[in-house]
Length: 617
Image (tube, rainbow, N blue to C red; front, side, top):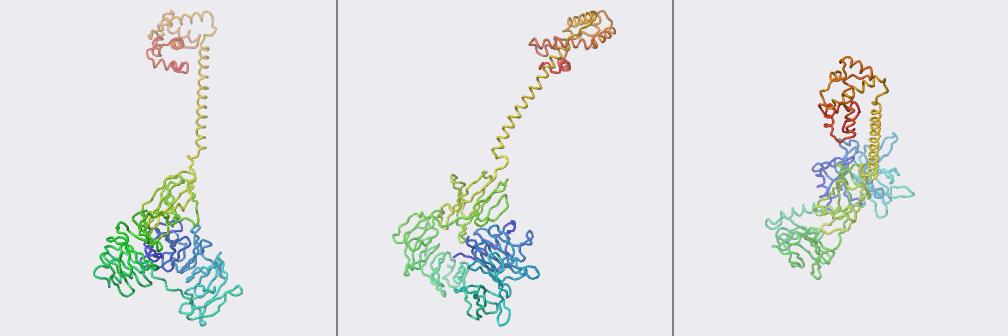
């Protein structure tokens, strides 16, 4: 039996972080659990003062309550009662100020609304004392003397009032008997039986003592442990009071194992059965065989029957034993180290049985934001840009959560990866785009692996740079762009060649009068004769033409519009252009051959005249 109250008390100390309408907070020490249930999936739900509605999965507690970030989630965080609606996958719960419904499909919470004549919610500030789900899916809840019957869609079907001896009485408890009659037990005593007749629930009788009370709840594991600790501290022999293991023999009797001995407690007194056992680690009792099986560090696997201890297996390697029916013992040696001892043949074999456990996904965290896994969901679509994904797992084995081990892989061809024992979170960074099948296995408390029973489809949309069509487009764009640039460069070079040819043509001398042409020919001959002389100046040219400097200037301007200096430089540049076309001399050599003292100045002048550098001509 699951140790519910032990689990609940432990989970009240769990600390978490806020997430949407879900909060994990620190419970106050000493908060009393007012109500609890285990739903069809296996989660434990409970409520207590101030903590709101809580869900425990064996590892983490999620709390649904109002706080600073969610002030309007619940009018009161004091949960008093709850019921599960399996068909709708809902948890109904009542608080000191109203009733609410939590949908396990998206973990949203909405109030149960009952409009009064003033068009306000009648239940908004009412203390909901009892709640129960009927076999037909309808829900019963009570406040004060009002017994309200709701349909599965949270619509009021019928309203009843509970009175006793002419006075209104609040309801303490609800239940159905074997005849499908509804019983309401009242505060301060008394019970009312209701029977459905002609489509309506009618009061059948009142009774003081006939309420069909349930048997008292058995002691929880923790309560039993506390009780045995108290008994051993008072009655055990010497200081041997530390309980290592214990098992029930009857409703009130127990076998108790300590560091040194085996004891028996009959409900009144403690008696020592066997000493010198040295740590009784684990025990199991078979009612059918009337035999106690125990695991001792000193003697191995033993049985206690007819007041005698018998060694079945002289091995001290095992940590725990578990009775498999009445024919075998499962012996836990370590993680995935399970052996089976046949009680009839005393043969020890490897246990190859697959564990009957089913791992489930309880929650997921996307880039630090936690969300609970909706009920029945098998497909998870990740938002675009998600980098880190964390998947929380559980087997809902509350007693052995720290001993469970999980293994997982992506798709059928992936490699199985094992988490350390007790760890329950799978982390992925940069999942591949598209669909991936997350397969999960788990062990039971004895280390036996289950088959791959849980498959979760993870869908990560491709980011913009992961699309194939984008890369195809970029390649095509680069090719087109490169072709365009090459074409533009060619178009730019062709007009330059044409321009150079036109420039040569334009520089051919125009038809001039004979006297003027003869004068230019003499000037050209004079400059050509001194082409390599960089010091050949305007004065030297005037002297060769038997003219003054001033007359040479006026004559040149009148004939071709050039100054003598421009004329000499143009003759040198035309000669340089000829040499560039017809020889293989370097630019420096040609500059020297045409009378330029500095190659840089030659380059500058050449580009001004022809539009290109000498080396590109």
